[in-house]
Length: 480
Figure 1 (cartoon, rainbow, N blue to C red):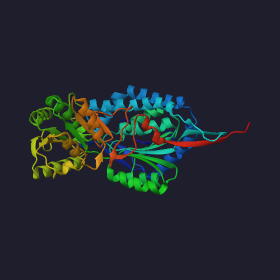
Figure 2: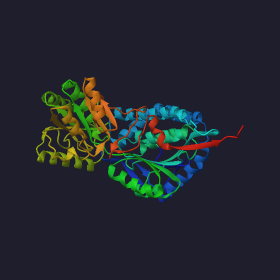
Figure 3: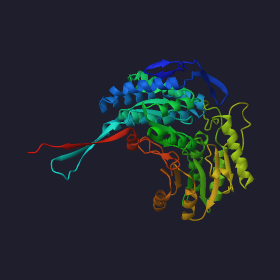
Figure 4: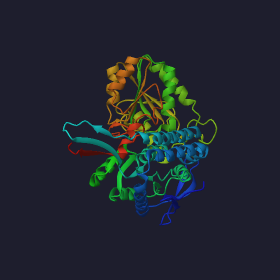
């Protein structure tokens, strides 16, 4: 590790208070580095730097802005192994997953480097002789990007890349527990020659930094990924300044495994999707509805696949499941399992903290059967390596059960029947519908949810629109 400071106005700088906070390795429970820990003053300085930079950044051509973004993507790919190792050390996920996240993040910068060229206005038809109407797109201004710990680079890339492509400038606030890999991405910004103030990084007290974002008129937009509860608070506070806001919040993704699916293949796909990053994924599959005719074969295969997952330190070769992120998360996972068992569920494999390790937040991949509606895991978002299995008989029954939730971020369908797939995609109440695919997110596909899973979309063409204002220009021509 080299850099541990904040990045403001093109310079690495320490916190004025001198305060630092340790970053902990969840596999060893030992500190990795101590990073500078700022507050309102640093956030205000970053906003002011972003405001100064906006005046010139927005005037660059789309080709010029895009060139910076593509250079950043190239540098991230060149340094992917180093960035991925840093991510694994501070977040816990296996190296293969970390490198996949780095490459996906670079893909976002490349995508939006091209999407900048496709920001277009239009001439509107006129009904009054001598009048013409034009619409044009204008960058919102200075934006704040707030992200959690589970995907510490990708969730920022989905915000930073479209903002810069649109001509906005940004101040980023990462999770205080996982700032190191994002620092390495900011080193790529610096080495790509990104002008000072265009992108700024402020680690520090989340309450103080958010207070500055919300109360400082320089900040025109907030983009937040995190819990629904915090999202609601930000939405209320944004109203005071009529700030634009995008929210990517909680999820509780149902999985529908229909009768025509191959039970063993379906189980393999579901286990891969469920235990990716220990289930600590907003679009993680969380409720597995299996047609009753497949239930036995599917369940047996899922248990076998889950049992054979290699648990361990993410830096070790062959490890498929790393530690959970923190001890508090393990405690919550145990509570959800114990409560589900108390109302009828059976533990088929896993069920507790792994006894293989003296240190580290390692939790056994867990499969539950006979899960009832009274189980809290059916309604409360389980950011956890737990796979609850439930049977269904009819298509309409499965859809009704799947939609019976306050969240609507993602839903998964396993079927080989096109009619079933299309009907399910039409009727499921989720912003992302995945057919036979455990990892549906990509830069070219919109990402976001319905109901209490958020507002707005990230990625794809839809991902740049929240960073743009539409101007209407009316012309009255001279008479002939």
